Image (cartoon, rainbow, N blue to C red):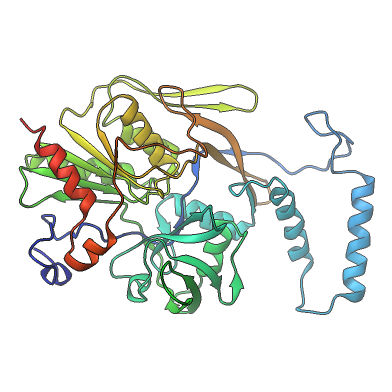
Length: 418
């Protein structure tokens, strides 16, 4: 049955069976611009050596310790400001080492931040009901999607909104994880966001009450009405819960007599490598899905046996915010010519991060490899070009509820359905 918001749409808009409105952006506050492939465990140990493992001069030496002690003494004697603990200073040192890499995807996690990151990869989060990704051009966090019925939607946040400030603190140069940590907080507390929105004459000021911990619905699907049984399946991110949700959605679509599929990866910021590989195995023919190469030259291949290869026509929708794991799936589908890509060039994140736990329950997230599509392309910094370039028409959707990219996909698929 259609919900009330759908009943208000004009008759020209297309809706899904099951009450889903195309174009609504879903999900909870999470950081998924990364691909986390697996976890590693190491121990913190005291190092007396003056050289690093790579043979270069180590930053851990007598001069470094002496300078740190000098700075600590100066802070103790002269610093006038908010009281800060020894633990805060120590965390700042560790964070600074990762920030020195000039890699927006590598960072140090405190115990609490690690817990948040692991919950996020499991499809669990705690915040306002919005995905957050990185706007590379502005070097600021940006809303990648808003979940229906959440505080973010009630506050009027939209995809593409740039988070300029959180509670008065500017976000330029901060990692997505840091911005997410600022936005998240205890249930029923308020966070104030200063938003930059294109074509608005001034900043937007939003007070948003944080919501409770929930599990993410990462997959939304249905048969499009007024079509010849064309299925629609949207993946909002790739989490541990996504594989089962995808399998259930495909089973329901097939049981409904689906003859063609629109796979929507728009504004999907990525997520778990194992999840996207498992989903690719439900779509692709036998062969390579993706491979990664590490600093040492080690190559790891992820393959498909082809037993579940999709046999119906397919269109994949992408945009400039489709990143990382979503680019792995879109790139493989394009390389195998299993579907037509429609939309705009993707984000261009072709590197992989790993969370490395330390034995004091903290961790570092580090870029450890690059990934390549089956044909050997690394799309980092360039993205994947669609087969059909088509900008999303926001005005048409706002005025009439029409998603022009979906309409184009329907046109393509109806021409292929036998």
